[in-house]
Amino acid sequence: MSLSNSVISQIWRYPVKSMGGEQLESAELTELGIAHDRGWGVFDVETGNVLTARRTPELLFARASVVDDELVVDGPDGLALRGTGAETDAAMSAWLGRPVELRAAGSDGGTYENPMDFENDAEWVSWTGPGGAWHDSTKSRVSIVSEESLGSWDLARFRTNVLVSGSGEDDLVGSPAQLGAAVLDVTKRIDRCVMITRPQPGLDRDLDLLKHINAEHERCLSVGALITTPGSIAVGDSFSTL
Image 1 (cartoon, rainbow, N blue to C red):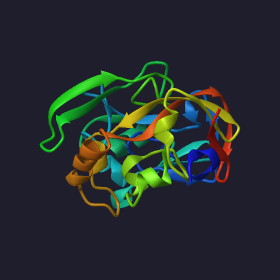
Image 2: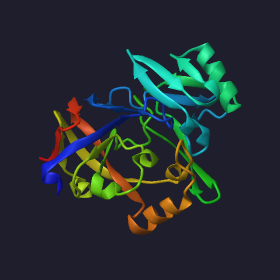
Image 3: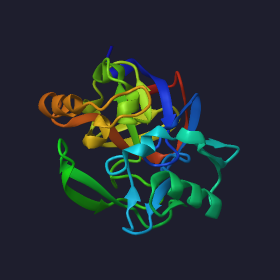
C-alpha cells in the first residue's frame, strides 16, 4: 500500500517535552502543531536549558496529558502533578534532584542539547528551537511515520505524532500534503539522536537501534511538516499528497 490511499492509524500528543504522552482519537492541528503538543517543558534553572531525555532520561518515566485544558503529570514514586506553579516546580525539582520549573512555551524558543558521541554521552552540542511550542526544529511542527517504515519498532521510541498506513512518506518531502482537514508542507526527514536509545517504561536501553537507523536509514525515520492550513484530524482520516 502506498500513501496514495493512506489513512491515520494513531495520533499521539506529548504535552511536556521528553515525557511520555497520550494517544488521541482526534486532535486539532494548529500552526504550532497538535494543540498542546510540546506545550510545556522542564526548564533547568541553573543552565537555562530546556531538559530533554537526551540529558535527563528520567523524564521518559513520567507521562503527561491534558485534561479539561489542565496539564496532568504522573510519574514514578507517586509523582502526581496537576497544573503548573510553585508546588509543581518544587515536586519536579525534588524528583529530578536539581532546581527546575515546568514552563509553558512562549515566544522564545528553548535551548536544547545533544551528544554527538551517543555511545558515550559525550561531545555535547546545543541549539535553540522555535518559539510557540518546545519543538527542536523550525522546519517541523508535526511528525508523521508510515507503518511500513516503523516496522516492528515501538512507536514510543520515536515520539512521532501521527502513524499512517502504507509507505513512502519520505517521497513527500518538499511537497504539500493533506492530513485530515489540515494542509501541510512536508519539509524534512527527521534525523534521529540518542533519545531513541533511552530506556522508558517497558523498553530497555538500545544503542543498536540508533546504529541501525544511522547505517540503514541515513539517520532518519519519520518526516516533519509545517501546517499551512490548520484543521482537525482523526483516526481513519486520509493522508495524501496534493
